[in-house]
Image 1 (cartoon, rainbow, N blue to C red):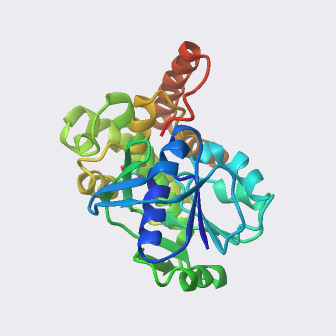
Image 2 (cartoon, rainbow, N blue to C red):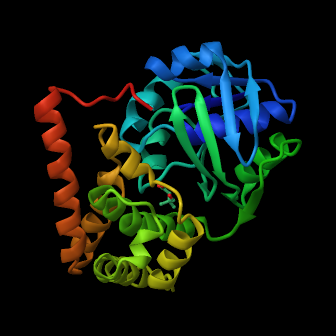
Length: 297
Ligand code: PAF
């Protein structure tokens, strides 16, 4: 049995694709999303389907748990998993350091990265926006996961450079996510709007510099452009969070870049500026509502 821990946009999409491939799937969610999933899961976009799913509030034993909660919920969700036998816990979350948090609670942690695209149109309704890949490390656990998922339609690739891919995605996210969230624009506008692109270049080059000091060759500017144009019509996950008055994953993306730059004595003023802007926006939500709307999609 496969378990989706955090059946939001991406988790619901993966769960739907697995169930449609014949797997028994459990969807762990909360709040209004859980209530909606108990009724049905609707998928639209690249694929159109309506599924009756097994939606639960708490995790259960599984052969493999696909871990797709927001980065800042990792600790709480990890704790919940420690009470069951979740099998291989495969995280494909955005951000840096989540696998370290998970390792406190469960043994078989597998750090993956994904380029699939999904948005929640409404509670219980996921839009399949872009077919991508799931990259997993080419080690024993990665191979075990591939074996378990081999009957599924998910596109999975075993790679030797997972750490580089995780960091490369974080650098891409560090540019696209906060800029789209602050300017309230879709991903493609980052490249098309001359002024915003100038800011994008500054943030991208700081990330590239950090990766170079790790020993990774990465053309951040070209990659940001490629991803922003390939996902031009998408609203980034951080834009969706800000639009819903929710907390963002900024600490695990730009925050992690700033922390690592500081350890290595590298300057990253553009990251610091954009980080503080997002934190400032989050503070305003917090002040107005007294709390974040975390139960929303
Ligand atoms: O977080 C996101 O939205 C995605 O990782 C990305 C690549 C920016 C596409 O929207």
